[in-house]
Length: 127
Ligand SMILES: Cc1cc2nc3c(=O)[nH]c(=O)nc-3n(C[C@H](O)[C@H](O)[C@H](O)COP(=O)(O)O)c2cc1C
Image 1: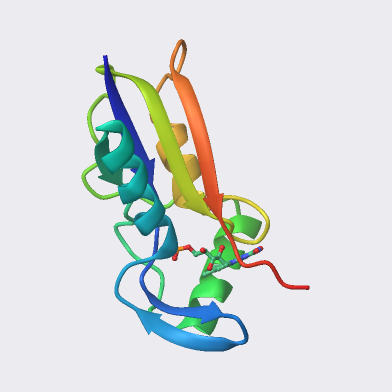
Image 2 (image 1 turned 180 degrees about the vertical axis):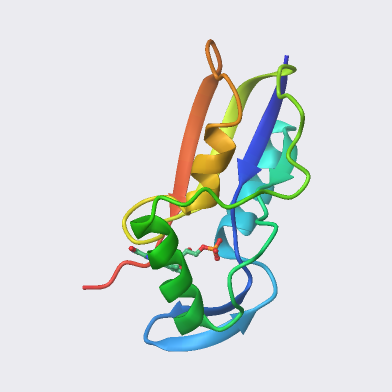
């Protein structure tokens, strides 16, 4: 049976060790591609129909509101089914202590009974 790496990731402006930087490829996407290379899994990027802003401060405000209101943002090109996969690597960035709400949309779109899920999460550790 096949493997899938499903991941959410955002390029654009993000916070790196005390400063803001625009990037072309998000952290989780880099990790997702490494896992796909190592496992031979297919890749699916969980993309919102209406993406969050490129600007970091606007993005965190949008994501916070979506979390507080329990929103389920619509996803682009959501596969009709994922029956062919028995092992799924699920990657996401930590957003406000949990997953981006679009990852909830993804999870609620399928029945994962009997499938093995390997979650992986990227984050910023501030001490
Ligand atoms: C909307 C938003 C909320 C975030 N909330 C947290 C958080 O609660 N804790 C944390 O450690 N990092 C937080 N981060 C940082 C991201 O988890 C981190 O930069 C992650 O690697 C981004 O992944 P990406 O580049 O694949 O999108 C947040 C970033 C954004 C944009």
